[in-house]
Length: 125
Image (cartoon, rainbow, N blue to C red; front, side, top):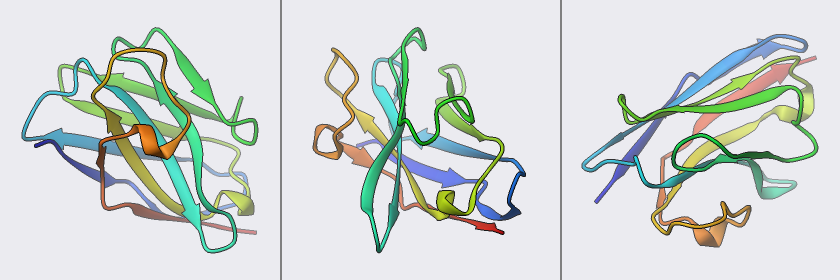
């Protein structure tokens, strides 16, 4: 059973940057598609970005494209989300997720098997 733990959340001013990390334990995520989602009371859970198992394919929500970058370090069993030029609408709880099945990375939460506990990101305007 893979456990995922996010870190790096916090308070940042609009226009600033944060880096989120998601460390996996209890198994390797080398062959898994990994993703970041975020959740707010108003919008519910929404897709942010995903990355295939070797990092050759990444996908982003339109709202974060060109500002956020997802990456992974399989040697460290960790993925990252670099967030730049942040906006107040980026405020949310951010979750990392793992999909055990190989194939085209999915943007739907239902495709993912393992989830972290979430980390709060707050952007002040």
